[in-house]
Image 1 (cartoon, rainbow, N blue to C red):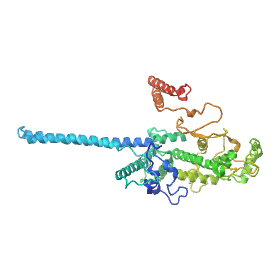
Image 2: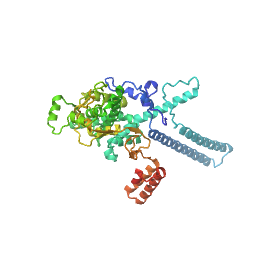
Image 3: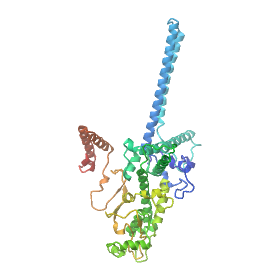
Image 4: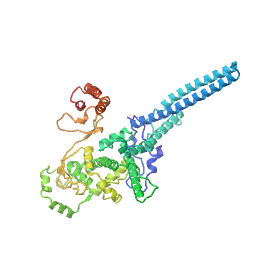
Length: 513
């Protein structure tokens, strides 16, 4: 069900899109597909927050223009009245029937102009209702059937394109500017992927624009570097800005893109060849995660030196003694594909290029396209945490040697035995929980883990009420401001709203109230 129009930025230019992605495409880029013809992008719609903000902006502009016109009209009518009074005084205050008819005509024109303004305002408000059925694929032309409906559809498509242009040209650059000025205006930069998702959704930006936001952040960082070099060389053509672009913004965006792309790549690995990797998922997952949190693969000599320095190293025999033996067949089972670190990162880069139309610049340090100055900025521990959140993987709580070289165990052996991987071994995979899409998720993300063991359910699956949440946030703000009486009133009202719906005092938000 669509509640907002389709995003024209993700519609091919040939089919009526804005063409922003096609115009900026580099022919030498191998990971970003040259076309937007993808069935997955058909459901790319604009966020309701963006539609609301855009409508409010247009209404404010219309009201300002209307106020200026009315002010100008009142000033003109005042000047006309003053000139009439001066003319009447010049002839001794005597007016004839002709002058009275002129005054009546002017009053009539003033009344008609007010009616025209009211009608124009109503028509303008009706124009803010956007058509959600624009840019539909394989839609037959209705030009010969209903010319008026055909013209109206073209007007609706142009409105949707203007809305998409506003997102590209105004909203995202404004967000990047606010991030640069965050140290001065008190804006709090998101600290993890969940808060990042909520942050950009409040601005009306979809997660598929992570690549565009990263490009803007990368450009701002390059401007800062160029300004610093110009200042060192005493070049007055470039001026150093008061606030620098926070480096954490680009790092967070790329970390989230890699985590989201890794979820889809891992899912494709588990489903290939009829799901043969599902026989021993720990092997595939451990090798996959080891490849993600490393900068290269170990050679045989390096692995032998590292294992000799470890006193309590867990070899393959000990590892298989802790697992279920014989899983995967006795040599006649289909083996999963063996992938090294280079293959895993190639699939992730292609997925990032397809979903976000962006080329990674911080991750995959073995890539020759990654600059040396950016190789040490990859966030491996937050990336591992975020991938586990997005995929439902549970790991053993310990310190992993991330950011070094890895050993990818590859596929299941012919006898169903696990093979070694580093820094994450198959025995480090404790559990894999399926993620279900739930509209009542408290965390702000629609996908939440669903456990199988006997429990009351995931705490993030409680019903979340927008009115009660607003009451709770108002009470929290008043408490921080010192207004304890209002804070108590709002918190009691929020708790009452929760109890009316869930009929139990065990709701997590009630305890907070």
